Image (cartoon, rainbow, N blue to C red; front, side, top):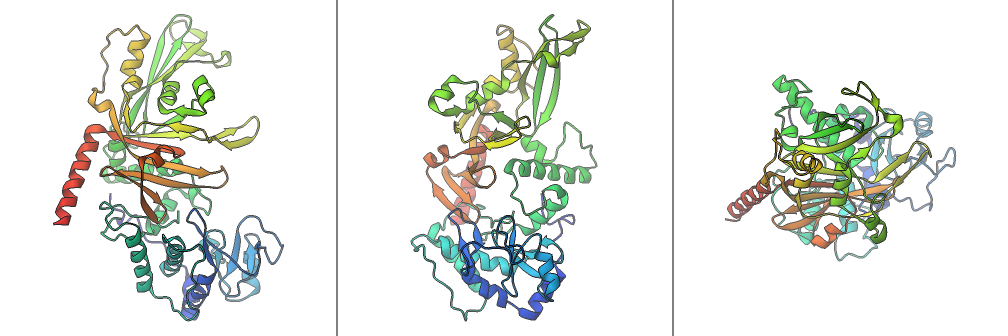
Length: 471
């Protein structure tokens, strides 16, 4: 799907930022370069050397969002930033100290400027180059902002790290395609379009990778549905999102009195799995969970409580029931979401589950298909099933892992990609080769598998493209 269609417009330029640049050019950006600091996880923040802990000049607070004025370097919190702007004419643009993002105090919104982005990226490169000391070299105070020099810095760093990445593998600058350029890409237009589609997620706050994934698929589906003039609830949707990720779950609810079973089917684009820590004695002893254990837990029959009695069509009254989920149809690309964030409404607490999950690189989903589950339930008797997957289409190979590090309130996502029999770690703008042991040891949050036949075909096609490019 082309992101440059008419519905994906560029962000509207901020008038106040344009006025600032017209009056002061890059003076504020140049002075900012000496205040940027790259954290160990690759995020760039503003480090004001005048104070150890930045505080709001109005309330002396230091929690929440803090902004530094581009004009006078005054620090204000989110409550008082507008007051600072109103008290000093022309002080309209500030920088989020923690995230190094431009903020218009009059628009009350983040704004994007490619010139500012180049400054931040250049500083990230200097702070992250291999072989460099932790004390970063400062730019000369007289150096003017030069976009060409900034690109040269990016190219130099990319060359030091790896100059022969597979085609299309490209870092993303953290805000939140392939054109032959190997320098990091800032997906500002995509981010802006996503905010338009999901206004509830358009904010400064970090967003959940799983929510983002579902939101993007939903946006692609809606866009293609309008073009095709098809129904949103069409189970046979031919949009690229559903052709790749759509599967079908089967739910069997059985009356424990008479054995009558009611079956329903629900489409899905991913499967959310609980870690098998509570119900697995092996997990408690070893301190780890397995993906097979999580899938077994997902497809295991569950007896519903007495307070959840359902009306039995055969008994014609409320009865105790059991429920069992299975997979009726597998997708081409299987997305498994691991529930690492636990929220308790009773205790009003939230926590992250740091349990290690052992997952295979080759996955056979046959035991979790409806055909296997139902046959096992009835003593392995043979049944005919619609949409029954063949053995070959139930075999998958892993190609991507999204891992989360840190705590519930603050953390960082990285992606591991398997391309041409090599694993790559994508950490914002930086890409590097890693061993498979690093991937296996990661705190996986989302796992992406592709059907084995499609996986080998894609790798074969990619190898052919590489050989053609090298000629």
